[in-house]
Amino acid sequence: MDYLNTIKKIKALAETGLVYAQNGYEVERNQELVDLSKELMAAIANKPIEAIDKFYLPPKEYPTPKVDVRALILNEKDEVLLAKEMMDGKWSIPGGWADIGHSPSEVVVKEVKEETGLESKVERVLAIYDKRCHPHPPQPWYVYKIMFLCKSTGGELRGNFDIEEANWFALDKLPPLSEDRILKSQIKELYQLAKHPELPIVCD
Image (cartoon, rainbow, N blue to C red):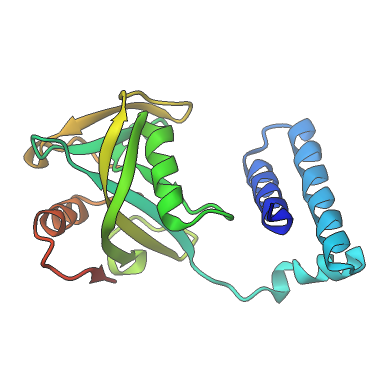
């Protein structure tokens, strides 16, 4: 077992919990998990906890882009799989932030399952977008978007706690899109890339 990687996952989950905490109890419990994870890291590294604290100080970190992974999935009618976000009531191809401890392809398969109920497998990368290069609404983070072509392998369509529903849509009948997550121009480009595997991966 990779104990260090597991501890990193726990720390990342707890830090995510701090971001979304809705009361003092949740803040306290998630902060306790962050602190415990750093104690375990210190024990594995045989270093004092102060060294771990200094390593994770935000001013010392080199700022890097956040990574968003998303899946284009087509059915036998060439319809696009979309999930309706509860946050804004609009639709996106399934996906989300990359998780520490998982490869990009593992994350996108997990996101598809969580958001739509469908099992899937990755076929290939279609595009790597720099969000700055596309007309998304303003966002505080600098984001790279890795867009995968995936194939559904089973399961049943459903939503989850932050997804109202999931469904298939024809390319010329797309519903209102969550443009913070995906643009119509991107879906159309990804569709063309999916249908023409001889085309190169799109970057930026």
